[in-house]
Length: 471
Image 1 (cartoon, rainbow, N blue to C red):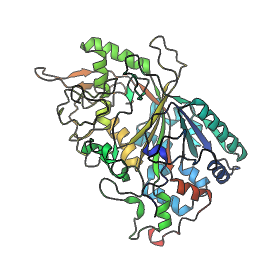
Image 2: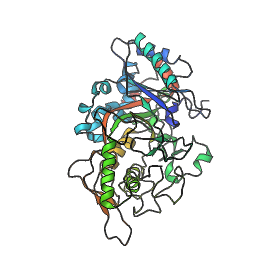
Image 3: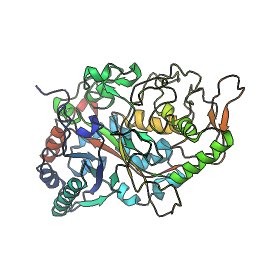
Image 4: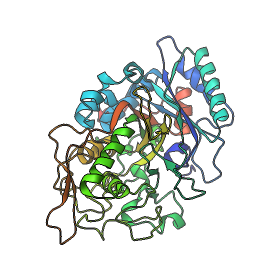
């Protein structure tokens, strides 16, 4: 009998910090032989390619492979399987480019037509991601993939190399944390997966941070108890072969975001002078965390990695309701639609040189290549960005009307960012004129199948017959 998490790609369940990452965009041209390429790819050392989740030590090289809908078509996945994606996952079926405006709020300079490498993202069939601690390990793997791709007539385009940043001078010694260009410690949020994580990790977590596996993996029950990837909409459960195709797969969103670090630092410095707030405190109000990862709403002296909720900060005096972290993870705030929590497994690394805190030149590119994993792109990723990030969430006490202060596409006329003040203050502080600090320059919706499913794709498995009752 198979194990519950057998064959899950490692990147989905493991948030291990890495030092080096490469993302190779693959285009299965009409003359290519993608199945041949997959066969050869999965024979590479160290096996298995892609890497699978496990309780053992971190591998020397982590390999991850996700397909766009077009990539699955070109890999000869049967039509009735693809139709199941159209039914259950319309966002994946349509792709990020078509969903960008209405469902992600990507317009103006963030629109796909403005992406510098738009053809790469539009023609994308698959993405192979390579993570390691040593640059040489990743470089050798890239060369091997390029060689195999050339033999199979598969086009390869590499995104900006991602590389971990050195911690700031005032960071705690021996920290293994990741850092981003805005100067914040990254990866401190805690998500527990009840059927996967050990009890010693789950026990200290708040209820709002514990989730069932179906929130991230297909074929498992969600927090609600529902399991959408085994049947419907007809009365019959899908054939076993079809259920096995989806089981232990996950949807991944790959997004490249350019970060305007100088604009952010200039804004913080100017508004800190205007409001007489310490600059690091103002950063914490905007982000929802201090640069070292501590939440303003956490108890004094708490470990930055300790879980918390906002029960002791119901009025937002410590952490504003509109801050980036509180929007993206309300942690039990009484929003009108928190009956459906929207967790994401966040993986990502910065690209480009560290900001020199001096004169900036326009040609320098720096930002974040984010990886986000979930079981529903519509209910999780898109909802977070378009509903909670791009507007004030329904039910929130935020009275400002600003978009997410860090990732929002701020425009002239947007409302102010509101910082609630404790008594005896009679009114909140309000920051007007937030400029955009980020620019999306690429996005892709991908399906990360289990290794067993990937092997089946490479061998042209049938995956069961179409169910006539579900036409």
